[in-house]
Amino acid sequence: MIEACNIRNFSIFLRDSFLFAYMEYIGDDYEADMKKMADDPITQLWWKETDLCQMPVISAEPGVWWAEMEEVFHTD
Image (cartoon, rainbow, N blue to C red; front, side, top):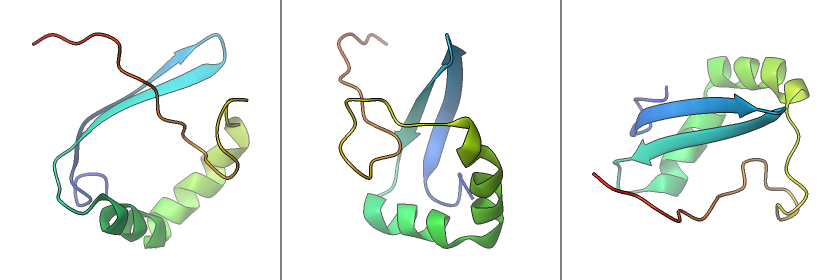
């Protein structure tokens, strides 16, 4: 489902009980692709299993599960 929703190069890192995720989105309708993922029954089962292991960071907006981070450096 991740690939079907136009996500590539997806990684999740763990440090001191914090999860950090990185992904590259290559589609042209992010909202529609995220809805497609959220509507997928297998993805829903996976999220049900893993949601208990996660909690949003304090600075996240209300209702935001994965808060975006500002990129401060990048090189290719």
